[in-house]
Amino acid sequence: MIAYGPTSSCSSSGCVPSGAAPTYTGAGSATNPGQGVGAQAVGNISGWAGTNIDAALLTGIVPPQGIKDPYVYNFFFGVQREIAPKTVVEANYVGTAGHRLFRSQSLNRTIGGVLPAGATLTNNVGDTVTGLGGFPNPNYGVLREWQNAVNSNYNAFQLTLNRQMSHGMSAHASYTWSHSIDNGSSWHDSATSAAGSAGGDGYSTDTNNPGLDRGNSLFDIRHRLVFDYVYQLPGQNLHGPEGALLGGWSLNGIWSFQSGPHWSPYARLVGADLVEPGTSTPCTAADIPNNCVNPGGEWTLDGQFPSVDRPDTSIQHFSPSRSTWEHGWPGLGPGGVFTGGSPLNYSAPGFPTLTAPCLACVGTEGRNNVTGPGSWVADMTLAKNFKLTERFNLKFEAAAFNIFNRANFLLSNGTPFSQHTSLEDPLFGTAAATLNSRNLQVGLKLSF
Image 1: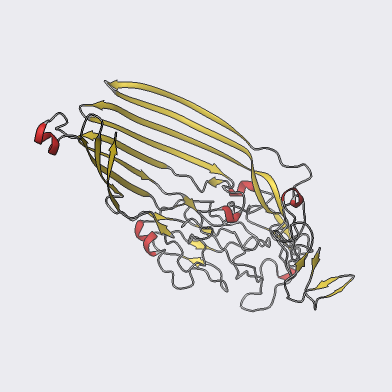
Image 2: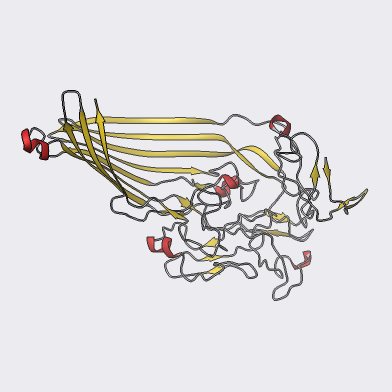
């Protein structure tokens, strides 16, 4: 049960909120107010009216048909060949196809739903939308349902070269080209670590057309090369004083290079204030579509808050430079490229043009079409073995991690929404963190 603040007034038509926080009774109220815990929460509707400031929490609705188990197909084909003594080349194809993957999102929204009631228009994907003046069910805001709504596929070519120890050297090199595609990489928006809650990542752009969000997965890493080696330096068989000084040394290391993950510029502003051009007069149904503008960032006008909408763009594939990840996209002052109050209109030489879509339209920017920062890291270790007696051995190691001290930028620092990928972010397009800087360590190991 939900009890509103002490000055709330209620009648047969509903309650007028007081502004005071609501209180809850019932199972689980201490930890998950109004929803219960465990099985008690399944199907529990505790959504809130969009205009009710005494707001409850999200819902966890299970559809009448229930939730089905996801399933995955795996594919593999490989060949292996010895091209020289102790040297083997291997080439593999690896693939997976996932079906019925989970997504949890609000169904109480429809494209164009917040247009003035009765207004109709045809948007840029050919759908005729009708304004409802708000949510399809005006008694609630977020009605979040669990769904089997996502499919995915992954294809990769893997090439490896292995050389067994010979003449004091062993080495291994592997290269992977891969492409992961889906229409949702996480089960809801706050579970997304790379690109925030942009359409398709957590919430669909259109719940009735998940194909609009089919694109690169958040974790799609197109290229990865790894090389590791062990080299026993000359002098392994020396004895006496020379052996003690020069013998037993080895050098090993791991070098890795990879391209970046993928992300989408998107608007995270709340709300859409539809007005007549050049005025603050709210639009009416008669103004749609030619005498109405949307200065906000909620371009599909479906009532999703915060917005997850992608803009229109001139470039469908873009890889920012390292300088961009250090300084952000050019021409962006404090407050970011898009602060609301005016339609988005961003352009800079060599960068995608980003503009606001038309009323109730879907942005032409493909999902996750911008490549994040790549990385390369070199770790090396110099070691020497000292044979003290027949039973006792001492090993000296000097290790360097990221020995060249390269700044490897990251989209996220590991916490939700830490990435600078929403268009109103004042640091839009800059890295949120870096991998570890150079780290040196020296150690001794006694074995017996």
